[in-house]
Length: 154
Length: 154
DNA sequence: ATAAAAGTTAAAGTGAACTTGAGGTCAAGC
DNA sequence: GCTTGACCTCAAGTTCACTTTAACTTTTAT
Image 1 (cartoon, rainbow over the protein chains, first blue to last red):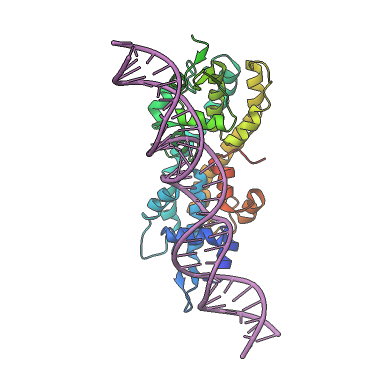
Image 2: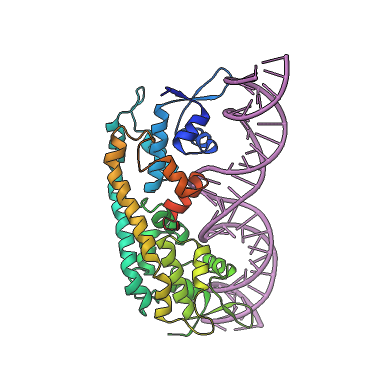
């Protein structure tokens, strides 16, 4: 178990491509030391940071949000388990929200799609007012807020 | 209840912006008659088609997939409730998959993030091999397949 | 008859999260 | 010492699902 990893080792162990890791570094989500020749040398702790990023993305956070979360980690020392779990504590409600939306959609498959109510006027699931109220400027944003990221609405 | 709708009426009743409706038409997801002057005139049945599109997006399908679904509708007659529900029948399993992923993520918040296992090597939730096997060419696609659209894997 | 509102097209722009390419440098093994 | 594979930077390209803009034409209401 080396305590310092090269780019390739990071890629292998995290499953995240080099280009993505460089991109994350450019956003300040991760950091790396440099060899005398200017190549990246990652402390092992970065592996966990990358894991957190991947995990958070699956939960539905944008890299921007992830950056803000990571900023709340203690500086100057390697974060401990409890530091990480403090961050992810707020995710549970987001996950629950998205799950319940999916449950509603599932229920709506029969109730709403197969019956005549999918005229958009009467259906609670795809009610334009409902949508307009909750979702702001159109389906693009609505999708970003509700389906794609799924958990970003507040 | 007019049987033919103008653009504005479509927008009002569907909650989907005119630019999006034009875009959908350009993709062949919806169609429209034209007035003598070249303006779009939508049959009422298009409202339901748009509703289906919106619904399907919430479930997590891409417009491309939605197009393929819509292609399975009967041509030559206005689709009935059962036609629609036949299409959406396959979604239930996709929704269930995504829900159970979210459940796993939720469980992982404590099990995986806060403990030491989030070194990516031992953790089943963010195991690179697991990911690599399921997700193909990297996190970008992985995110498309699993988080963003959530339900597209087969 | 005319003004205002609504609609048209085609092309370019947007934002997120990367990826790709060009043109070079670094490090390890023989 | 040299080759080979890994690595570097910076800029531009990609995908998706739209939106915006510009320059015009239709429809509707007065």
